[in-house]
Length: 453
Ligand code: UD1
Image 1 (cartoon, rainbow, N blue to C red):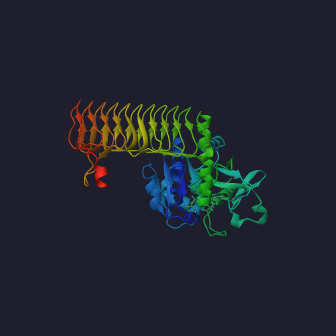
Image 2: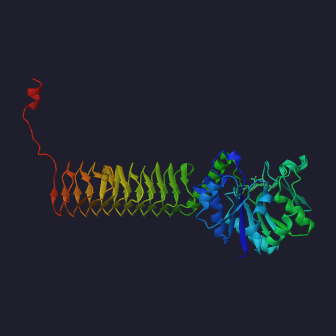
């Protein structure tokens, strides 16, 4: 497909009241600019140029892995001038270019495909997206004559009568590159804002009998984000859509209004999600899991039929048939294998916990490898930090570590051994052994009676 894209992103977006570019603000977990870039790529448009200006550093930073190119618009003299700033990107190209504003995160892939398909089918010089709003606010109005688009009039330049029109311009266009380059150099800035309006190209095209077509999108798809209030509204609309999609795919939500799921999360069927759950990033949850209230899962994988209650999980992998929580904290790089129990007030960091192991209460396991079918009692602590370095604890398969044990790393407890409660382990424990490292108990008879006589 001979289509490239330009995203106009040089505007200040000053109503966001932010030190970062508007396009870097996230909707359901992803920066608005990257939502647009990813959708374009899914539609087969890979050659993408961003016109950047104010706050460009933050915008370039969040898009640096997206294989896009940049044009610079030093002064923001209007959308027509912004497109001219991308002249070098366009000048040797044939075919067609999509030109999108950067702040329309809800426009769907299907609608991008529809825009392209109408553009090709009707062989238009320009096809663009309109919408019909109850309150057209400051959007440019579509002025039609005999049904055909005559021009787009910016709200500030409209007569009272024109302001009552509620078909608006969304700033989503598809142009034949040749016609765009020919027309754009004739745009002037004689208007209320002294800006070079891209929209003026319509009158120029009409003067040259170039074909112009439109598609009309649902008003919820073209919500523009220009303020924190609109950002919150876009989040609300997209969140609702995401949750509905999961429900349509067989996921139960006890209270979708209080469930926050990012756009790239994958959830399989027959998962049950209780109220007040947040699932972020690239998390995958396999079928039959149950996620109870007050759980936050970020960029993690959860295997089949696992239950997670009131817990926080970052960048980790949890196996099948496992129970996590209540009140567990899995920090990055934790691998919890199958049929494991991680109970209340247990923190795991950068550790692997083998299948069938239980760490049921009040423990810290960091930088450790714990084997299969172990039982780690209440209050065990891997003493992984010596004030300078992080050290590793290895507990091999089928070990029993009693309550209140400190394992001073680096240290290994070999397979099938026991560590007595209250022991501080500083040396290797050989397999099949009992390690006991505490003072022998002494009972002094009648000590209390003598003391308080
Ligand atoms: C523009 C349209 C208007 C439409 C509205 C939809 C024009 C003249 N008007 O309005 O018809 O209803 O979008 O949102 O095109 N930008 C630059 N450089 C500039 C100016 C803008 O890159 O010099 C970028 C902005 O970053 C933004 C996009 O162009 O992504 C649209 O600009 P914005 O100021 O939001 O819209 P308007 O120009 O008011």
